[in-house]
Length: 462
Image (cartoon, rainbow, N blue to C red; front, side, top):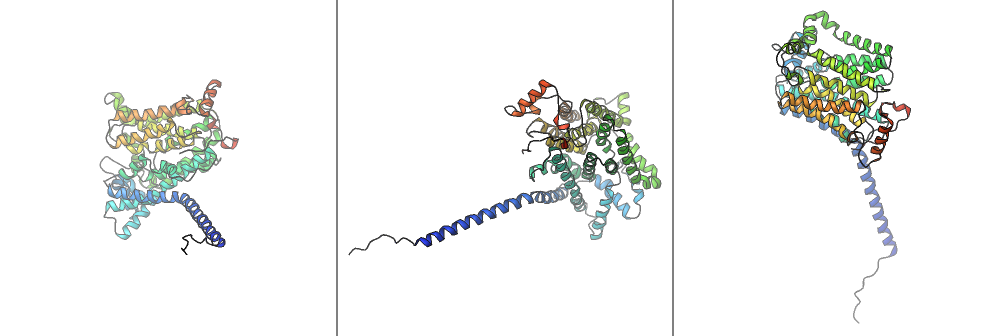
């Protein structure tokens, strides 16, 4: 007989066993994938931090050029190591002096001690890269505090996303200021200011004042960032809190400078106070429109009065226009961006790192405002960053000034309540209809209410 070609069916128990094995395999792969995804999301900030620190050091080493770190801050740290810490302001390079406070010299001196111990002090690119890698931790602290500020305003934690952290860590002005100009104090200053705002929002006025005083020991431009906080307290008739804030800040700054003033008061005052009036005019702001005449002479010696008075007037007008502004609201960060932007707009000499503070505060304001982040508010930090890039490549001063002015106009329009649909809402979404209804009822701004009052904010979308 002819043999049949049909196959014998496997036993049912074997089929069941194979199916069970396949199911277990799929479940194990799914569990491993889910675990890897959770670990990856939690590890994103640490990955970005490592990438940032290594990138900052490598960029400093690869793109090294003589900067303020080599001209002033490193020699000052070396002088402190040799027992003359109170005489660091005697150092100058021709007519140029260091007009930054002494606080950032503390970690820099510790780094200098380690670099000297291993014998790398004679290699400027290497030692500068190490310094930037160490001070990069202050950049991480600033970014963490900035994310906390956004979370506090929005009322819910933000996802640990690389995009959110990158908005603060990869800001061009910060990189220009650190890598190209060697200003290691910038992230330390921003971190202390944001800490002060958080403490003031929690009612710890004296502690907030101490933190502002410490920030003032990094650079005197901190006064512009502190200005909105003081004016908000005065506008709210909280005179006692304003006096406590100013008094503790002044005492902290005075305590930090006291020994320097007693040991070498002449050089300290020359570097931190009178030096600016003697420095040459290099342009880069709106004041370049007045190159000659009595106004140019006044600007040469008293440009600080020009941008300082402008910051006071602009901030006071916006504070009086607004209602129920609290220290932790997005309006405050917008006010701080507006106030600090007066420096690069109206200073007699403008450098790219002058845009660090306006860009950082504008980024917090942009992300903290309710609604989607996909609107024209993004243009404010982008314009400030673009102005810093334009300064770096040597663009005409009037172009830089107009870029800064455009960013300030967008910011000012939002702060005073001029509601443009392109800025406040997106066509085709319920936000746009609500914005139209609000305009019909009159200008309001829900963002100036404290989170404790029950304000709900939409989820951040990136």
